[in-house]
Amino acid sequence: MLKKEERVKIDIRKEILELIHKKYSNISVGDYDPDEIDIVLDELKEIAEMVRDKDKLMEWYQQRRHSRNKNVSKYFNFDK
Image (cartoon, rainbow, N blue to C red; front, side):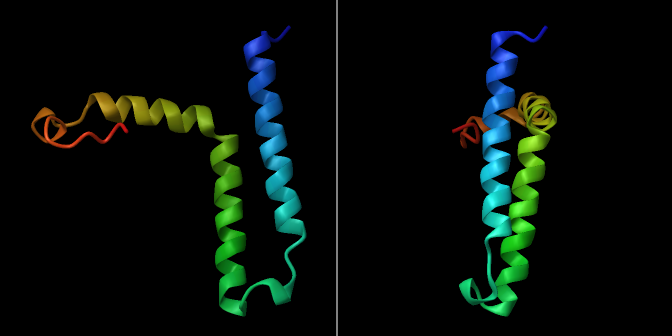
C-alpha cells in the first residue's frame, strides 16, 4: 500500500506527463519554424524524462550540493 505522500507525488507527475504528452501530440508544422520544431520536441522529451527521473535528479543534486567548494559557496549562493 502506498503512503498518501507517494500517491500525491505519482498523481502530480502523471498529470504533468499527460500535459507534456498533450502538448507534444498537438504540435503542428505551422506552430513553429522547421528548425524550432526539433528543438521544441527535444525539449519536451527532456522535460518528460526529468519528471520521470525526478527522485534520481534530486538525490544527485543533494549529493553535489554537499560536496561543493566552501570557498566558492560563501560568495555565491547556488541553492536559491
